[in-house]
Image (cartoon, rainbow, N blue to C red; front, side, top):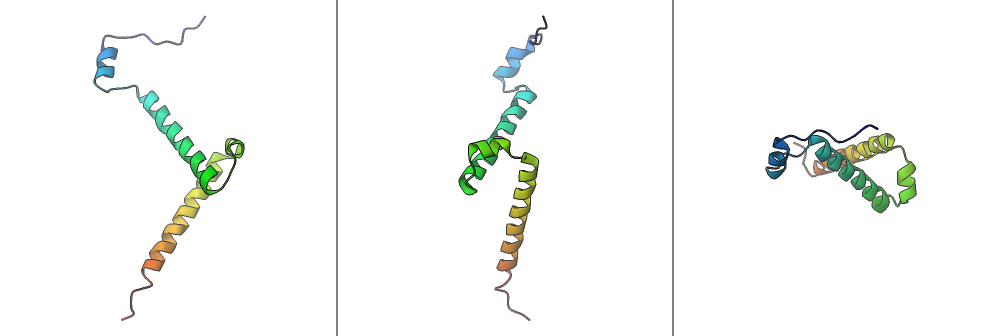
Length: 87
């Protein structure tokens, strides 16, 4: 039987006490937060169901969001310059 636990060392307890957590655990929390943020946006702003969120292609959806946000930013920058008078 294969054991998944890693060998502990003297410094493991010291690392936990001083905030040096395992990077993979921290990265997993960050990725989970990103996933939930995408779900929240899709459900609240685009009225998708949770089931639809689970079935969608995330890479394509992130590309779509990137396109939309960049377009909105360009529109806002253009609108900010409309008030400038010609020389």
